[in-house]
Image (cartoon, rainbow, N blue to C red; front, side):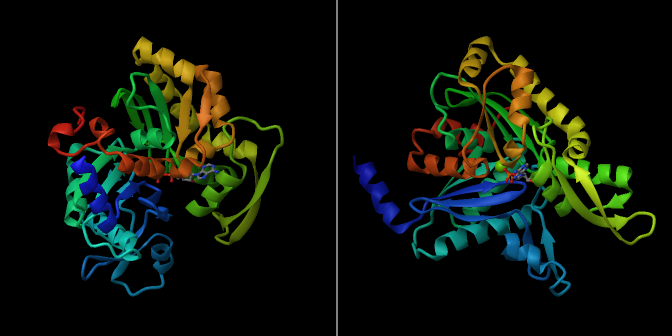
Length: 354
Ligand code: ADP
Ligand code: MG
């Protein structure tokens, strides 16, 4: 009872914050306000001071237009923290900007989602960085778990749920029951790999060099995992490998499918592998309740259908899959006690696998 009042008192003076540290996009959720930051995971760092000067779109724009000592860094590459100091700076920057508008003066409670592939050393680094940045309490949650919570799956009950979170650098596959991850797999095949596949296909088939952004646009515009009723095409511009000059070609949905086929196949096989090692009772829950897709990659046309054809269970795509993890951190913030078994607070809670 008293505890409840103390919590209410704290809530008046601090903002509780959820952070989705994605490989492609970073989102910040503030309790009572919703998602306040949704930016690409890029930071501009002043190399002289080590300070983060901008994040996201603004950081991207600074590229090539700034003095030499400002460089852009992607703090998470393939779901692994590539630069601890920058990550720490970025977390501090996010906490500051999230709190700026509301002028609360007690450190916030923070839930941070991390890719499930990161090591325990990295989890500790994220936790300590968040504390150093002024958080009063820090709770780390694996992103597929947060995604499941964001999708309103009953992860704390004795019933199995399965989530496949297809992000930029990694895909997290997790089977969750009773507040724990029963089976999981983290594969480095996700949106970035599809983009790279399209780039190399265009280079070998059309003898044209295209940038990553162009490849991503093509993927989003006409990409699919299986043939669609209507065929589609897009015009792409790149540099002719022979003449060195700009050149335009038309690329079809079938080209894009060929380009990504191997990666899509590997991804689907990984899902199958996890299902094959899932204990029978939980498997029967998953067969009944279906498999839930989150992350930007969930939007790839025909992927849900392909998965269904292979694993023969119902596939559901999250509403607004790109924000599922951030919304999940928000739901956790509402009742940390209820979710405590699934959160990483101190070293005893670290997953055994790593
Ligand atoms: P992360 O959690 O790793 O930051 P996100 O869940 O934000 O990743 O997803 C980003 C990825 O989703 C990018 O690779 C992007 O190209 C891809 N993506 C976004 N929208 C679509 C779409 N409509 N079709 C296919 N891929 C998409
Ligand atoms: Mg993610």
